[in-house]
Each structure stands twice: as structure tokens, then as C-alpha cells.
Image (cartoon, rainbow, N blue to C red; front, side, top):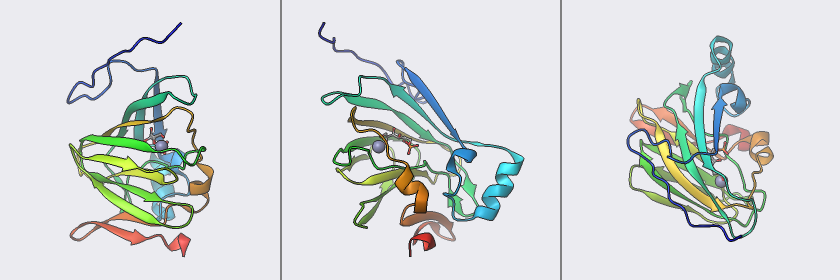
Length: 190
Ligand code: S6P
Ligand code: ZN
């Protein structure tokens, strides 16, 4: 039987979609090895395995032609000077793209290609970001108190390759500086 079109809503300001098939919570322990200040990371983890970000997914068959959509929520906070962020990933099918639409909060999308090109785009409410094929992507929340909330859509067959980023992190880090967020080179990638 053919699938029927459907709608759902993203109520503001709560932003939890009216249709949700999967709710993912990622805590500090899921970001092992990713934060630059490892000493502070381990200290924080010994106190509490804090909730860093959540994803609400609308499930579709993971086949060519389908799109996966959802809401990503990165909570405010820092490990040392580095803002809370998602793990970040390449898509397993590298040549797949993604669209993000920022609904709330302030932050950045940190991106890079396997060849070493980098791009860091600021996110604020109303901004649409197109992540072209082959670019790894990580959302970073730089709001002091507000969540960074984005709507995303990407090909359902894309899959996630987390391993490449887990090994050495992204080439760029977003740190809290004296005059606001600073984008710096990741010393692990030199
Ligand atoms: C999936 C898309 C988002 C992320 C989400 C969490 O391709 O980019 O749904 O999964 O923002 O990030 P991560 O890196 O933990 O999957
Ligand atoms: Zn993605």
C-alpha cells in the first residue's frame, strides 16, 4: 500500500514534535574523548553524567527516497571553556546531505570534509543551514541559558559514521572566550 502524506507540528516554545517515534538522550559519558579539557571532563563525569543533548526522531524506512526528520536539542553548558555539543558524524553514505533549520538558541555547526576542508556556521533562530554531501557535522550550543534547537531532514539511507570523529575529533573547536565564542584549531589534529 502506498504511504499517505502526513503532518505534524512543532509547538513553540516546547519544541517536542507532536509525532515522535524515538527519543535519544546523550549524556556526558557518550562524549568520552571529545572535549579538549579532559581533566575537567573526568571531574564533571565523576560528579554527574549530565544530559548534554536530545534528539526526537520521526521514523521512516531507511531506504533511498525517504527522508528522516526530527528535532535536535543541545542544552547549554561547558566542559572547561568548551561549549556543550553533539558527538558529530559523517554519514555512512558519505555523499548524502542534510538541512537544518534553527528554531531556538544560539550556536554553531562545525563541519569538515575527509580532505580537511572546514566550515563553522553560526546558528540563530530562523537560519537555515545546508550541509552538502561529504561534510561531517556537529552542533554546538553557545547560549548561556537557552537550548540550541534545530529541525533536521536528511536521506533515510544515510546512516551515521561516528568512528572517524571519535578518533581525533573535529579540526575546529568552539571555546568560550573573553569576547564571546572563539573558533580555534584542535591541537589533536595538528
Ligand atoms: C542525523 C542528524 C541529527 C543528529 C543529531 C545528534 O544525521 O545530523 O539528527 O543525529 O543532531 O547528533 P549526533 O552526532 O549524536 O548524531
Ligand atoms: Zn547528520
